[in-house]
Length: 144
Image 1: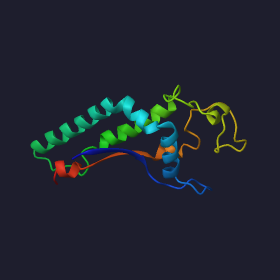
Image 2: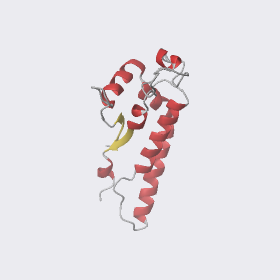
Image 3: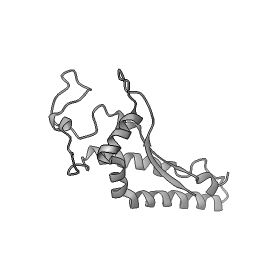
Image 4: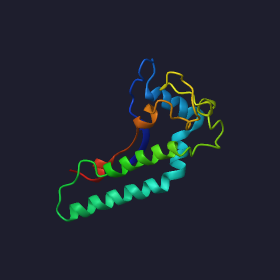
């Protein structure tokens, strides 16, 4: 069985005792960011995946060896979609969004720590950059 996952690479934030995994869990519990993203883009994601799988199957039928990760391209595109989802402030209008910190332009990236309003959930950019999509069970479908 093939299972689609959304998550983050668990890396520590600089000068903090927290990781991207900690932040992702808190944000998901409070704002349902990845669930909202999937609800909005699930059909597009399925289309990207089906094109990758069709291409892998076509290549195998043509005699090429199976690729290690037939969904690598679509998973990269899902990351790009998620980044654009945050950049374009597509969570705005959901409960609590835009966040107070975003409206006030509060950011850990700047010395003054406050500036112009910014998109919600993009403070340091680490959460956004650490987001990953992956699929388990693909190797069973495409033995190699």
